[in-house]
Length: 180
Image 1 (cartoon, helix red, strand yellow):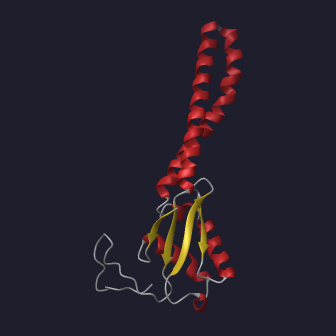
Image 2 (cartoon, helix red, strand yellow; image 1 turned 90 degrees about the horizontal axis):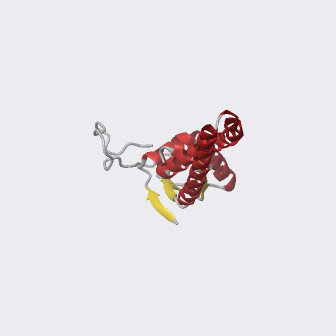
Image 3 (cartoon, helix red, strand yellow; image 1 turned 180 degrees about the horizontal axis):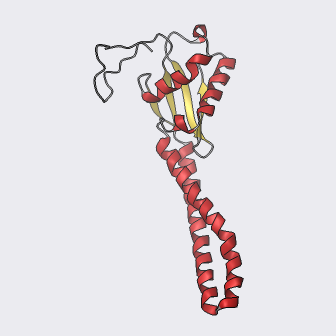
């Protein structure tokens, strides 16, 4: 399910253009904007791209450049919120995993000290297991949501005039239609 179509005027489309423009010759660009589908991958740490308007070799190069941009491009994309949820849940799940083994071995070690210490270690271990299961379930759900957050962006072609009048922020001097 594609949820969003970004115009060439968007910050994300312009960031992708600045990333791939130096590597693709001008004669290989179409006259109008380039259509590309993006989806977050790798636990939200990079974007996978499919450029449909380039020849296959240049489409593969552009997709590789987008993948190499990693988090910098994800933060500018509409999928940034979904990717942030996945990264945060993965961080908490990993913290639970790292605490699992020391807490498991702490139970018999605390038994040598006292019965109350052993019960406290057992309680912390059980709490860690419950939180670990909960964060793994949340992580699985948020990964599915992130996988569904595909979007299409129209990347401006060299020489395409785009209008930045609809954007928020201060007006841009005397340039009503800057050239990209």
